[in-house]
Length: 221
Length: 239
Image 1 (cartoon, each protein chain N blue to C red):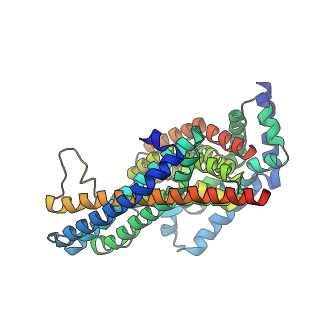
Image 2: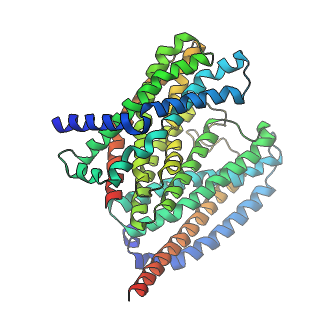
Image 3: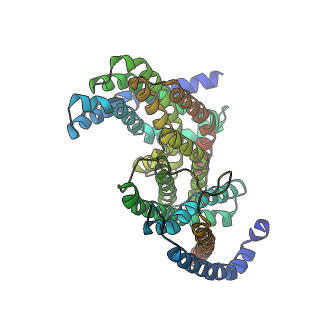
């Protein structure tokens, strides 16, 4: 357990300090949300209709930002090889990395999401649900994004490649989360979408560490 | 059969004859299917645009089938480290992307007169588009990794992740929205399609399958030859 908590603290510290940490994701998120009304009709009724959807899809985009450095730095300086030799299985190491990514990028974005949605005209009552959905969705985004980041390790040209690999995989969480918050705003039952989102996040949390570890071993071989 | 063909020499000997035979069968079946399809009576609602079905529906079948082939080949390549399976996976990805693209384009051309729009964000269209993006992601990942073996394993992991995700994508998209007509051919209680339309469609389906098989074999053969050529070039460089 102590190896686990030591690694977890290390990953959190790295993710928090890495190139501006969560501020970078928040800054991108704020910028993207600002651009959307500028490019579209700013009639409040028009904007309010798409407000939660826009704030939700920008979350998915913002979650891609810091993925590139998730494994790359450890891979380049040999840290990943040491971690692979250490007491923890590589699967657990990858899981810890994804969780740290979630806590340092997903959680701050989950706080920012209701603010963005309300600024775009969503009713304030949606804030708790949007926060919860963004937190859960962020977990799925981190797990799938981590898989893409680990796969792109062997190529050493990360960035855009990770986005191309990961975006199609993000379809289910985007649909489930967007459906839940949209249904809440429309006064419809929102629980099914939220439950599907939670199930998807749980499934991603359980399965993607194996894909991440396999991809890391492949890049190291 | 698959076990026997896992031997590259036997596969090369087999596919040398099987690929041209399948190709001839494909040309014959597609010609007959198109002939029957274009001489079939017009649909009472859709008029002559119903004939797009004979191009569109088999392409959509093959697009799904080819991802299953990619997943299966990736599984064998990843678990058993089988180089022929890896060559087959690499060969099937552009084919699958091409059939998926064909399904999307013909569907769009069919949608314009029937639904009055080129594209709708309907469940089936969206899931086929996501399928296309998965193929593109696979091709992009393989293309960006220089080391052949690493590219194969990374691609196999991505293909398997996509294979698990694809039914969920399908389900989520269905749950999200549906406008496309429901399944009308493989359904409990028999097909809702009249036999005069069903026969040419079935012939076209088998013809597409033969064409896919022939193209896949040829592409896999080309991949095997390419690997032999590059290893010969390496040997020549070091000798």
